[in-house]
Image 1 (cartoon, helix red, strand yellow):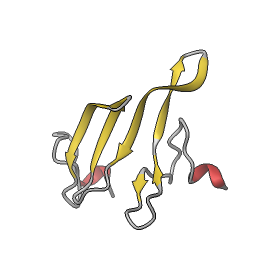
Image 2 (cartoon, rainbow, N blue to C red):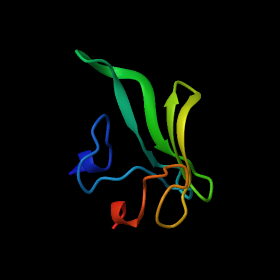
Image 3 (cartoon, rainbow, N blue to C red):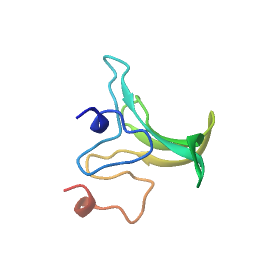
Image 4 (spheres, rainbow, N blue to C red):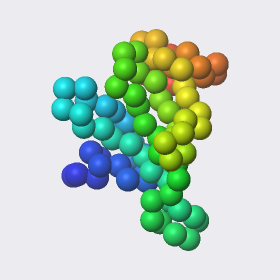
Length: 87
């Protein structure tokens, strides 16, 4: 089912955000313009291609928030994140 590979505006169980460095393919989440308007909004959630990866919320082309680098079991910029969230 292709919706798991092309997320749009909903993160489903078992779906992932990703960036494939070899192919340039990426899976991102895109906000709605408003509660009643499902056209693409200002915000996008994405994973960066750098190693280690980071998660970003972008508002247009400007970073709005970031997770900090991935450290094998958690993003270092999320204090409450531990191994129980990734297992």
